[in-house]
Length: 313
Image (tube, rainbow, N blue to C red; front, side):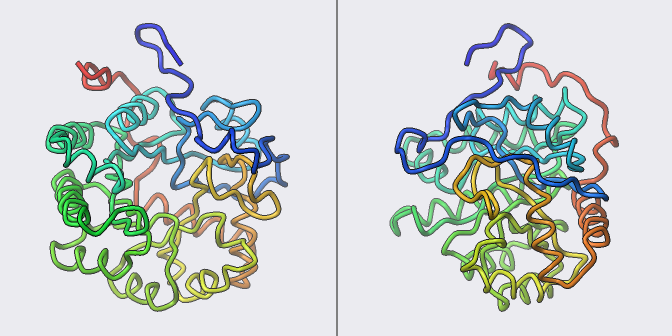
């Protein structure tokens, strides 16, 4: 979608499975609002999804109406990272994370473009309202073995960027739990390290607990077949858990398969509260405190223009 000078496009990519006919493409109804507000710790608002795509303002407005206070908007390549940083600088309800996704990094390595891409991420990571490097990590589900070395190198580079700028790390970990932990322990994890869309078991939760790392739970924790995730949630210290949507993916039950949005967070919070046998508002307050502990307050840094780096000049 095109935008004029100084304007931010509503979307810069579309969800690829819209044409498959295998999904329900209407957005779910608003859930009952939370009484105590929480933050969505990981979303991709740059996606157009559904039969009537919402722009970031509508996502945030709907979220606010059900008690979602703000969103951490996450980049996965240079373009989406620039967009994320730009949105955070004009929207008080948004903070940004910037990175090259682990599935993208080996491809950029092959084309000789990875070093330049990481230099842009390093530059963006220094900007106000950019509070994390992510999502980065390892993904052995999609990346063939011969490219996993380049993926590990990119992960290490992202870790160093996060430490250099004193900001959090958001990890994408798919079929690579042991390898991710190995890299973190080898190079030293940033002080605030988050496993986004936590997908491990109680054993991995114990590793996170011991190292002071955070587990961020998405709509997958509500799925019927996710008892292992719920056991991991019960294992984690309450001070080391977060909640997210991973919008537009992983919509919680009972709307699984429909487009996701930050306004769906209350369903995940209620499922987590039930699993933990906690009162919903007490859990929500804990999740909010944890988010602020990792990323800081959303009003700590002023809004403003980022300048030419966002426009790729």
